[in-house]
Image 1 (cartoon, rainbow, N blue to C red):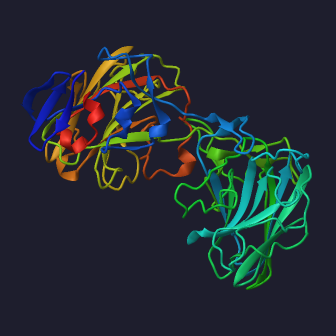
Image 2 (image 1 turned 45 degrees about the horizontal axis):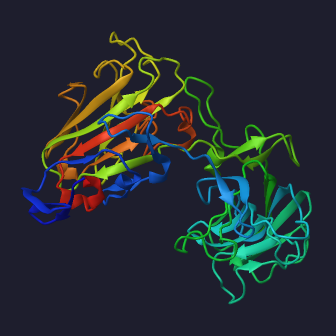
Length: 509
């Protein structure tokens, strides 16, 4: 095995016997994904925890390649007992928000929640969160007050209040709510004045050690499947590496949100989780979704259920949906004119079941990622009267700003087949063209080197099936093609960069 010492103008290769040779600096850098360390390079960014080294396919004979991996649910270790828990969602601090739908400078906000466990039995406590109900300043979300639902036996089995900003030099984690945890439905109540907000459960004692933003702020309600304070040891937005203890999906339920204003004038608004009250996504060539303008981010991480409810016939619960637009990017800042290559393995080929996404291979403007040119791989036959064979790879182009549908072209790239395929981006200062296995278009061009572009590998459709742009798309349109069944592998990403720009010598062992 050869390794090297880097020099601004040459490489000095070393062996066990000493210096072997001095060579000019190579102008091509290859990521062969023989090791997860490839993703540690200075030019690689993005959702690296959603990609893993796989031995299922290999292009260059090194026995491994890169594949999208949605961790979904992972084993967890109870931090207090060192025992393994059933499983936690991977992503920390998953949540959705609810804008206050009425003018409210003073009044109350109540939320019903279902506790499936109640107070823990005597003995070792369980360091496990069920979720949190948070009232925050939408203009400064780190300023909040919350009820945190947990199985932690702190303060004698009470519900806990917390705050994001310690405004009164007291505690950011307060067990003085006076309400014992029991199995069943309970009500969290935020008491709001113009200058501050306080919280209590089931009309019990007010947790006066914790204080949140008042009605003069831009208030917003947040439901989180986690602890926003790391169990009282931080703030999920401002503390470096805050502790995350995500909830187990489907354990806790929420219902019956009531906003009551006493100032500036009396008003009430009530919301539940019934059909037609919560956001639902559009479906590809199917039913049109429903947009509750006050909600944001609901259906990807939470869902409705009939398992428990207090009004109507449904409630909301965390369920850890499929994450969208997960990707990693390779920075081409400083690249030379030439060819960047990505090899991909297609496991399905011409399959037309219309139920899986393989992914997208993208070159994008480094300053505006909505400006991109992409090769998209999915098992949908293009639904049009295009005379070209329908089971091909698709070429998509979106311009700066990403407004409106993306240019989606069928019949330009070759037919889908099982096996390895080569994607070449021909890079010039002004523009880029792309081919798959030598077939492409000379007239459909993407951002050039002058934009300091990136090559992005995405486990999704960058154009959301040609209807939009992943950077600017409305959240109601993004889920109809989501899948946890990736079937594409990536290997041998070769970029016209100097090794010095990568600054990770292990790539060249």
